[in-house]
View 1 (cartoon, rainbow, N blue to C red):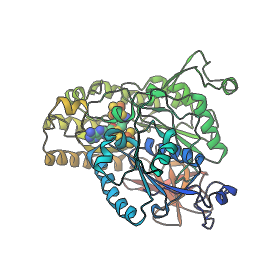
View 2: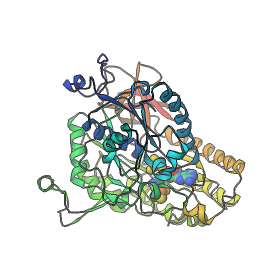
View 3: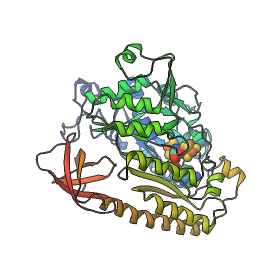
View 4: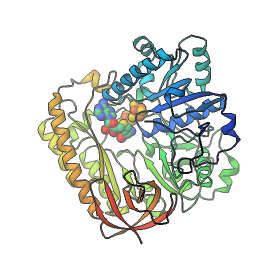
Length: 488
Ligand code: SAH
Ligand code: SF4
Ligand code: F3S
């Protein structure tokens, strides 16, 4: 994915693309070295790239949207499944060609694949000069300097404290309306299939006041939606410690005192209170940790979106146990029932599903399908199991479901989800939905698009409306992916 820079130089100002006022910084970019970043994987990686861009800007780099123009290229990588890593390896082949034409070009590998493979990456991929793990981004300018002097540079140290709380991210490829805000890093769960605890280290929460400040700043700059990010947002916790902003704390009447624990429900409320026109979303919730408190907070504030991503992974209790998810089918269904009770039938719910996990039988696969029938998800991210070296599952269980069986089961899951997505979208036909406009539709400049409360994309004729505005749209038709309608 190509990221659009904030400091594009020597380009005519294009009103559609540029959301922030271009100042003398643009001129300052002339003569600077240029950085190009490409991000892979989850939203957290995209958010991290914005932190890296900020660190590099402080070190005197401007960002560019063209790899060919860059002095330094970073790939912010993902290791979640084997194919995520293969994609990056293929990209490196292309960069090898680029470097042949421009030998002074530096190539850095950041993120989860960098953390997983460490110095092995330097041995395997000759084109790579720099390897930096997710907690080493403050060190990146030093690593670049080292690489400029001709040495390979590596920092894959994982931290128990680093949250980059004080770094104000540079928004890359931004629509100027919606933004990600990281609220925590790492993961302390040990789902047996998952590489994330190894690549991102221990879980730690970010100072809530730095989160509120970042969200407030986004709102002041015209943004109208923030998505609070963490691998398991429900285990967010903060107890007043160094770094807490006393003045801001005292100005927030609903905030817990510095001696009290700030939970995810408290944090949600603090962000929701910034302004009724600032929408708040969050991801990811863990079925074992999501509390009624969070659901009640969502119900209390109109601007906290009625949408929950609650990954099930499997519908069978034995498989869930092997996966070390620490809940079973009954517990998961209990959580879905609570969501429907407290937030109503309309609350959007999505999931992640894995097909063909170690020893999964045909009957157990059927239970994943029947769970989907029970919940009727609005959306799902669906994957065939991919064994990751070093994980508990790789050590303990044989990856014994043949690829063609995994694929066939995955296709059955996908087919089911398509029918549920259409069914759930059809519910909206005839309803008026509040939509935050994110920009013009990809298909046609005469149409705008934005999301409704439940995170569904809604497309409608442009009229005199602009991105960043809220409009009420009467939904008249839908596909399994989008709603269509007109502003009323
Ligand atoms: N923290 C989130 C998930 C992050 S990873 C959670 O707990 O839900 C995103 C998704 O990738 C996971 O939910 C899972 O469905 C999928 N995934 C993770 N490891 C995988 C693997 N080894 N093979 C296939 N899918 C995997
Ligand atoms: Fe991985 Fe589980 Fe942590 Fe999610 S909760 S990141 S699936 S270990
Ligand atoms: Fe991938 Fe790392 Fe995210 S493995 S999914 S980029 S946390």
